[in-house]
Image (cartoon, rainbow, N blue to C red; front, side):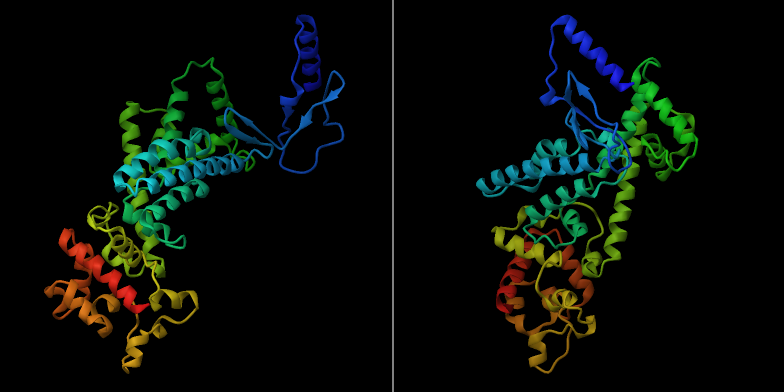
Length: 386
């Protein structure tokens, strides 16, 4: 059939004096893998048309394996290029306030990452999320091994899937209101019939839309194939996904040994005040690394070396015949090596009879003076330790 269509194209072009640019003409054979069959070759006016494994159409890569991973990988690559240019601008300006930096990210980088997400964004896409995580870590100036949950927690950012899940549902509702004669509507009904056949091979876009609605408690919307007010439903759906992402964020932090301390003082997904009030930047960076467990205390380095937690002791305290695990609480409140710095920078209410509750209170404070003094302490104590 395809050969007959090529013959018709050739006759049409000959009749009207037109030419086909074979340099820009390619064929994709959609299949589940394997080699092309011997007869899967096509010619136009005696010249073979090249068969390729993927093709970019309207900015999206269509894969012969019917997978969106090549498209998402390409979106992530293009997003990283835009993010790199944004990083250059921020460095030239000597840094930007957190809100302004993320406004630029949402304006420049996010549209590239989310392009076409109405189609591919029905499932979680780690390659897309990773670009967002990297930008958060860049603003915090922490290393790449820092936990993603801590990075977005400090910046108060929800994952990007909150946006592309909403886009998918919005496009689905748009299709439902289309004229029945339009191709998207006809294609949707075809995919829906395939999905209802319950064949394992019919995992398509409609299948993912249905699962997306069911997973967030909107099964009745799928059964009704529509909603009353589209805008109102999209708002409810968006808030539901955000609430779910907040629970997932907290659960992931709780399950990570790296963030055993972080989870005790970080419960709200909102930007931390110290990011906008602690200056100079070297003090802010030291506090970010300390909070996110991106430091060189033995509680963290010992984890990399597979040392049992009970044996990750403070080197200075060992020299004083004292055995203490060198964790964040010990570093901030207990270790005698930094007592002079504590007296200099930390508030008296914390120094007198330090407790873990006071430790949490100090790290949760929004007092600008206390935050600057805390950042000063962490910076100088880390230099003293090194």
